[in-house]
Length: 69
Image (cartoon, rainbow, N blue to C red; front, side, top):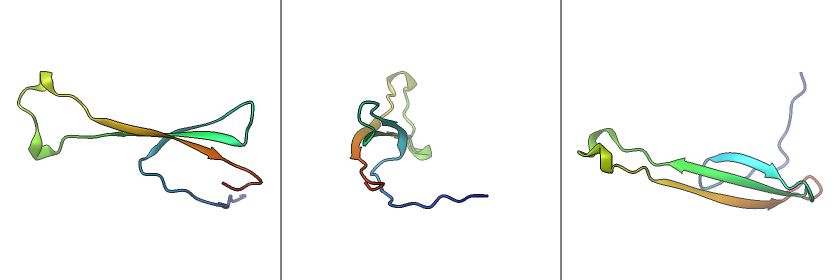
């Protein structure tokens, strides 16, 4: 079985959820991150109707050239 080796790695602030290369210039890729804040077990709210979920995310633009980021 063939193995794949990383040329370079990147650590993002949030978990990556998707990646898309720009079809008109494949040297550019956009990475989307997404994180849903969860309530801790001992910190539940009394009124579930007023409960809102906190989300955070980002878009990261990368330029990949000559097999390098």
